[in-house]
Length: 440
Image (tube, rainbow, N blue to C red):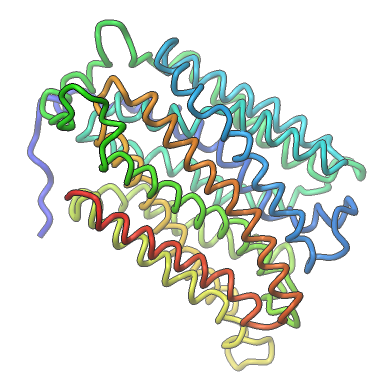
């Protein structure tokens, strides 16, 4: 039976509820800019004449998803250095301001080049959330509480997975006929504005000349630093392996986030699930609801019970199994099948398990980076890790969506559509191997 960890000085300090709430809202703003697009990217590409039909929309939609993290490639390390030099709080507020501007600008884009540029500059390069958030959470919560706070913060992104795609799909094209994405984009700008307002009043700076925030400082007395007395811990295998793990996870997860909806709306003749926009919203909402419950109530406890290393192995294995199963669903449940009413649920279950598994894996990978370096190096360490992770997150949607469209065009059916899913499952098996190579 799993027992809670013994109390330490850090645990006696008040839980940073305000910081957890603001960071959850900030993650919601960040994640909405990513996930809301997935529910209507294929339709947007067709409506604005960027693609001929939904079966070919993957050629364009993948670049829309990849543009955001491509922009992050060039600034992730700079965000880490900025957070070390000027503080975590101003870096977070600046990031949310960029998200606010980027959402509004994207809503008025009608040309593909402009849309890609806006997502790359404002939502990618100008957004240092991925770099700064892990550092801030590790400091404001301490090592003993970072999994719990991370669970709450990730639930903000999960809430956007729950509400974002569904609401975006419903309000898509509802304001002005010429600006199909304006309504979903304004919603994202509103979330970012709330994060800016609450963050300005509630966020405390954790990176100070005298040390870290009280919770983290007390808790740090009970945490052993990495064994790197004179040289930088960034050169050790635990850190390098953790960064490579985030690279592989970013590639597999973001490729899947883009590929699953594109596959779901593709025609059955091409090997897709042929879902309408409302049905796709139901599937994504149901899956995200299950993920949110797990993130809030189960993830931190599971990671405390099994440990970061074992939870990573389990999460990556479950995610790989779910991806391998998803393209097989249409062959089992056709419209004329006896159990046709269960089609949406049969797809939502593996998608929900995949979402929950990747959430756990990302949380564990971020904890690995924090735990593998000294506290004073965390800003730069997370900046480098975010930059490398961005390579995977940028290439994943572009390669995944393109490969899906190419596979369905060259070999319509389960084999053509399923090849990309099975390939991504293999990349998650690589993640398991990386975790096994890390020290316990």
